[in-house]
Image (cartoon, rainbow, N blue to C red; front, side, top):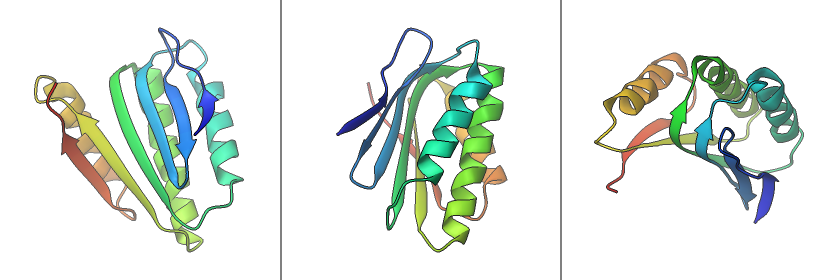
Length: 121
């Protein structure tokens, strides 16, 4: 497993293992635009046949929300180039806001599979 970014109290842990990119934790850093721009550039330059994206965030702020949408749109471009991409959005039944956010992203990102996954804590 390659760690792209260690998590902090304000930024998510980002790992790549095989063809799976995982974002886990919280995302409300002051420099969200730069943080996600760097992630988009790094993932876009990677060589893989397919990509599964696992998003398991406990919390994210408005700035991160906009950046996540840009990240998902960058995955659409990757898929358009012939490399399959799927997004798995994990949420707890105790947090309807995260489920709703996943539904919103799924509605906005229509060219790649976007699956909502309910997890029990």
